[in-house]
Structure formats: structure tokens, C-alpha cells
Length: 260
Ligand code: 5RP
Image (cartoon, rainbow, N blue to C red; front, side, top):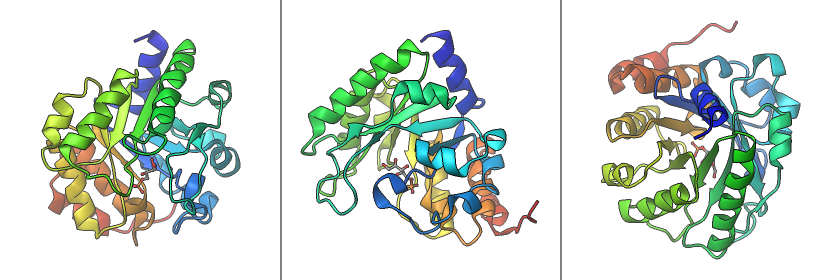
């Protein structure tokens, strides 16, 4: 790993752990509930995030350069939620643009087992080639098609393929037997939050993920769609960085933080 890749990764992964805030949903979902106005939704959350995952359009329009945490820039896109097949993605944002925006990493999705599996794997390989030229790490997201089982066998396949293409970090889903996925993936794993569930359940997911070997979470809807988003990100942070119990994190979630 080059010095630049290591240095940028160390901005995102603090003391071996990471709380990434995912707000890239609009790239295929449009104005997602809770993110209709990014400029209003983000400021209270940013001080609690180790990194922020979003597209260049969201970054340029809705985040102040002075108050941005390290940026993980989504550089893939294509189909909208209206399409049956979401795997038809291309690289849409250049590495040059990522460098211009001072991103700490770039990210894209692979769709193993989907119609455009091969193209998304080739996208990843090419992105790693180009990003490494500039010392930029690549976070691969293992997107799961509607028909795919989210089990250790499938997710293990996706994560291993991403790592074999040179991804420096992989974001995937938690599953039963997740330890096996960790064991067989030679790079750090971060867990996606998934659909909104009750807060205690989302905190339990974060705790299970850390206990079974993930280095952190990249959580979106379970934070920004919570009735107390700031409390929720603080609670997730306590689990990831302080090994807090679900009960004590839940107490933190319920606390209202006065607006600054
Ligand atoms: C989509 C993504 C999203 O960033 C991620 O899944 C959103 O986070 P959450 O599921 O926690 O809302 O990578 O491919």
C-alpha cells in the first residue's frame, strides 16, 4: 500500500474503527426520505462522522468545505430505482475530480450474480488501477440484487472478489456466520445499515457487526430517518469506538442534543 493510500485511509479509519455516514442514496433513489434537503440534514451529524459517503453533486451543493469530514466519494451510477436491474452501473465521476474535491477515498458498487456482474467487476479493477496512481483508496460496496441470499457464502464470495480486484476496504451486509466472511476477506470490512428498523435493532446490528469482526459501519437510513438522528449517530459511535453495550448506546440515542 502506498504512503498516500495509507495516509488517506487513516483519516477515515480512526484507531482501527470507522463510523461512516452514508448519504449517497439520491444517486439512484432521488430525494430519499430524511435527505430531501441535504443542506439542512447534514450539519448536525457531520461532527460525529469519521467519514461521509456521498456523490460529487451532493458534496458541491450541500456541504461546506470548511466543515466536511473526510469524504468517500461515490463515483458509480446509472440506473434509477425505476429500473428492474440496478446492476447496469458505470463509473460516472473521474478520479481526477475526486482528487480535485480532496476526497479521502472513492467508492462504487459491484453486483455479483446480477446481469451486469462482469462490467461492475471490471469497473472496480479499472478504478483501483486509476485511484492507486493518485494514492486514493477504493471502498467497494457489495450491492445485493433482489434475488440474492444475504448469507455468508454469497457475501463471502462478493467480499473476496472485491478484495481480489484490489479494493482497500469493502462494505457489505452483516449475516449469520459473518466471522467466516471476515476470515476469508484480506481487507477490512464495514457493514451497511440497510432499511430503517427500530433504533434498538439498528444498534444491535452495529454491535453484532463489531463483535464478529467488522471494523465499523457505513450507516444511512437508520441514522437520518431516526426521530433523533444526532442521538442515533452518537449511539452508533459509542458502540463502534467505545465498545458500548446496546443498552447504554440506546440511552445515548434517546438524549436530545441541544442545537449548536
Ligand atoms: C447503496 C449504498 C448506500 O450508501 C448504503 O446502502 C446506504 O446506507 P443504508 O443502507 O444504511 O441506508 O452503498 O448501494
